[in-house]
Image 1: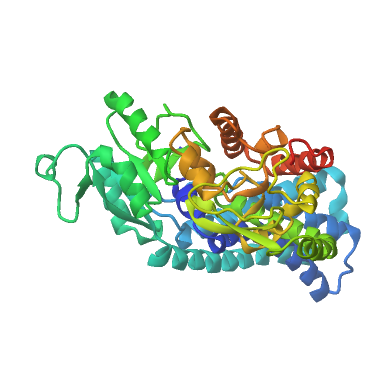
Image 2: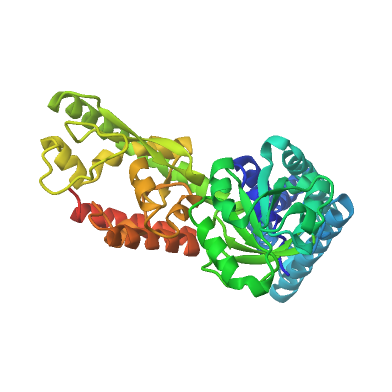
Length: 472
């Protein structure tokens, strides 16, 4: 059924694991290139353009060739025999492609036979050693209880019971089962030792919010499809990942993927787009771009800070509590643009000709210069350059009750800019419909994320800022 469901459930739990996944993808190509260069030095063979081209081609092929050779359905981390087999087979395919290219282009005559033979033998051995080390690091991370994600089951069925038992006996899954929710009692269900009913299905959303549950497996019979839809709708007011067992998609899906977890088929109904290496790409690009922008913007930020200090009494930087990744509260930084700093149960959004906005503040808001301190938030990992804009905590609590799926926008880090902002949803949200339009764009971003989408949003943001549309 494709790639196992261990990836969205586990690999999104922490930057370190995402880094290991990224290394597993990139390291074979690096090893192939470096080992070729090293062998040229050992055999005193000149490092010519031909060898450089061969190294680059081998590295590209090692990344592009499919990696999802089927592993044991009950294992999250490969054991040594299948790992070695997978690496050797992929290397043989790479060699076959390179030989075919060399034969077709007549370039094979430009290479030393001793170098190529030694390279063909030693490279897979080095890759095996490196991947086994990374595999063991991944195993240690997944086996650490501090990295476990808590899960609950909606419905006590054969599928949910089987999956719960396999999770309990496979620490490498990185999951901890808290229990089941079902409208039937434990006696009627005939539950075994160690299994418990935490409440009725109607109690599930409140429990997930209260206990900060990471994932919910919905395992109700298919004949209860309307009941399942109602349950999933209730879970939209949480930040938990939701999966359906077995694989059938009847919901409004975000990053839906079918697969299996420990041999049991499941479907990701609502998941973050930044699982596995995608999370690494997102975070690495944030750090690189933000560092570059800060180097250029820092003198201007210092100037703005001095002007804010001189223009009106009060702090230079305004701090506000907002919701971040998974609904956790974060502190967001902005240059102060108002004579007062509002925080609490009721925050009044800025409006045109708002008397609270200072003269300097109006200029800063027009060109979004007040947002520059959020670059520090990005480096801290609290925010991203691109993502759903963070709202004040009081606004979150207000709109989560009025807009279905509102909290799902917090499955990714909030951004300094987002898809909603470049599509005109910028400024105050005077009506619920205004906020609903913004949330719809945010959810579309989660559904369709790609690195190129981030690039397009950043370019369009620059154009929007220069036009200062809906900014006041």
